[in-house]
Image (cartoon, rainbow, N blue to C red; front, side, top):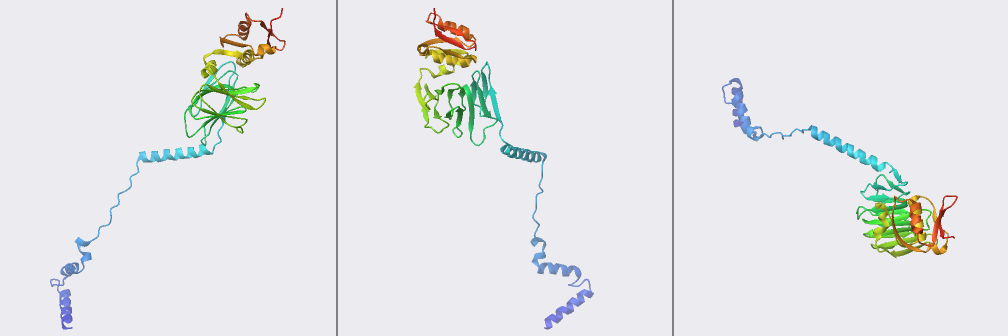
Length: 299
């Protein structure tokens, strides 16, 4: 108790005397020693936060990303428009959105989307076309040709599907294809190179045929009309499509008469028929409706 009173006396004296032990300057030094948290060595420094610098390049990248995202959303929500390509007296080569290449024969039509969405690569054919399909194992390629559907991954093949023909066919040149008849409700047929699948419309049957050289079915791309031991009825059918007119045989025996010949698509149908009939017991005549009729030679 006495020590406390003595200390108070000394403090009172210091307040009266600036030069005493408890003068203002000395008092502050004593407080600093007694309270370590206030000592300079123990003061906490505020954490340093590096200011964020936004450069022009970062702004441009963000803007570009926003544009790409908006375009992607817009594209996904926009219906895909179909593209239809038709030919007349010429062939035409078409590059599809997946880089597949299609050569369209005369008087044929191909319909395909502007872009292939949802993993589907599907085209529709009326007439004849040669396909060189870009390989994509995750997205099969499908050709809908009248009553026949042809599925592939990556390959080369020829499809003939004219609406007024009694049959639809697909000939494989390279790779592998699956052919499904009757609107994909029938049983599929897997083709190997140099094989042809023929769908007969009359009895809705699918037939496999072996061919010597499947590439012959696509010689029309080179301007050639190639017939190898084919019946005259088949030759007349192909010539009819090439020249967009009607050529038919009158006699049942002539229809099955087999011939081998090669012509150019620059030859006229009159020249071709004259050469086919020359030296054989047959002739051709033009009917009043424009039909070119092959018949037995008459005296």
